Length: 575
Ligand SMILES: Nc1ncnc2c1ncn2[C@@H]1O[C@H](COP(=O)(O)OP(=O)(O)OP(=O)(O)O)[C@@H](O)[C@H]1O
Ligand SMILES: [Mg+2]
Image 1 (cartoon, rainbow, N blue to C red):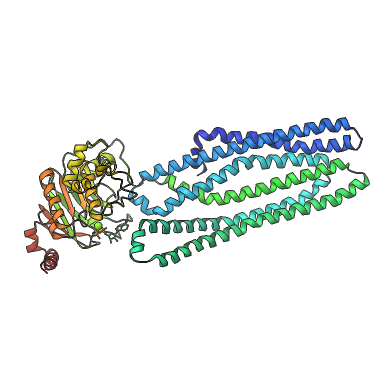
Image 2: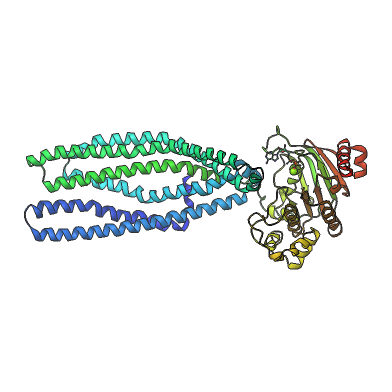
């Protein structure tokens, strides 16, 4: 895990290495200063040697300046290394998520992915910065200060034999209890982010249903849960401080007591005693930092784990090695295809589908909500992989194409579609980066979008706003269709893509499709019979199975479901 994550330090390794190097300089200076001070007191002050005091005093000032410079450099290097590391880690995660299939995203949830890319990386960044500074500083300081202290007075150093085990026990206790609590806390963060995302995306719905108060209250509960989890975790961690200080002051008092007696008896020089106490301070301080480091490590381990999970997640849909198949035509064949979102054979949403669609055919799909229409067509551009059976597009198994080739051949207008911030033209160019203005206009004409686009003062340069908020639902659908058309695909799939478009426009879109896209295999999923009536064949779906296939006239004869839907819609229209 650590190797995978820390390999992303990349070119910031230089700073990461320079930090401990400069810190060694800083610590050396800090540890030598008390020794110089002892010399000043014992050889200078006590003997009245002013020249010696001045010389050694100058040396001490110089050492402090060096220590300060090294300290500042170390702080700078560690900050640069940690920020660079966080940047690299975030980009790596983002790139990884871009390669995820729908199934991968379902597994983590978008909210959790958001927390992992933001909060978790920040935790790691902070821990890393602390780590490169402290991981060397504390042990080196601990060792050097102990050596110096023991050299000055071995008997007084015995105090540490009591202090260190107490501290070690306290740190061990805190760490073993804290880790699960931090994991829980991050889980609560996921939930809170989920709530925020859902609400911001659906803010219009919240307003429409006047659910603000309810949502405020429910968010209150989310933040309270985060606070509670945070409190439970931090409660343990803050124990560290008082325990440390208790041990530190108890040690100093003990040393002063015994040391004082020794000084009165003349067993220890005053300078020696005061520098010894400074070493005690340094030793205890480095122990304190070491324990904080351990705790920081525990906090960040939960985050490291979560980031690691994303980094090692294998995209469930990947290009096959050396896949170069290119679609011969726009034919589609389902061979005994079953599908479950969870990849098992118990929760099938599609059950043993056999289907043959010829190139250039226009196919309508009708069926109640939840009858797996979307699930069926999603297998064609390989948004999901079939759980059993084969999907064959243009003469090759979909798995034999590179994803890019396949998705260039199969354009799908999703049921829940989104436009992105940017101009209309920018959005349309998602279909084809190099589309000329003429091609864009042609596609928009086919999708009946040209006229309303031209009615905007800025035409194709109209800014859509985030998520395409500046256009109506029906306008958005038509732009999405135009975007798909620009790909010049062999197969185009419209999943309920004209549901928000009035019937007259719907019918002229279909007319344009018939005239301009007669070569293209077209699959239209719709709720309205009128949208699929003229299709070459219509598929009727029910409960994950194809119940009937045929033309409108044939289905009126043979399919009860179809006839019922038709009758109910006719009645609605007649009334
Ligand atoms: N991402 C998903 N994870 C798990 N189950 C899903 C997922 N998407 C859909 N389902 C389930 O699969 C079944 C078929 O859904 P599907 O979206 O294919 O229906 P549909 O015919 O397109 O319905 P609609 O007309 O409402 O769009 C439903 O029971 C649904 O609960
Ligand atoms: Mg659907």
